[in-house]
Image (cartoon, rainbow, N blue to C red; front, side):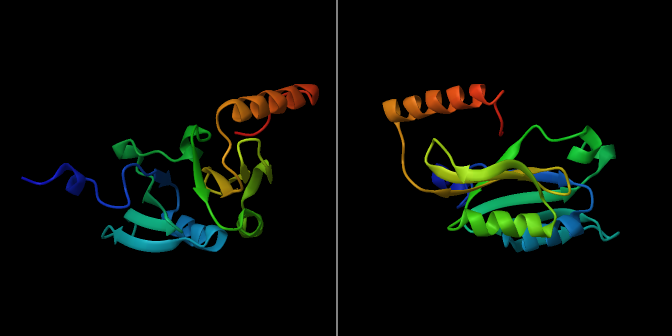
Length: 164
């Protein structure tokens, strides 16, 4: 019998599987914007991407071409995305700037966050949302709650909550 730990391939456990319209262009964008490395790619006979695995540092994600006939719809078909992918990099400032230069748009400005990360959000040209972060400090318990309350009060004073 196979041990249960052998049934979850490293480094997985959970990872995003994105559906995109224009998968080859999306792969090229993720390589330019985030420095993603293509780990694996399977193309259908018509050349469309059936499956691709990419890696940004230690973070893996998969993607496929939009296939409405199979229920695989992109954010463009759905009118937006309800999810966000967060990944950590050594220099979030550099990767954030690189993503913008490659064609992403700012969803949440890059800044030091109350939870201890320097993070900001972008939306890629394919409709997916990404939080780019570098960990600065570990904040837990009462300190996290106090920082959260202060952040909420500051946002309320500015007219509402932002970010994702």
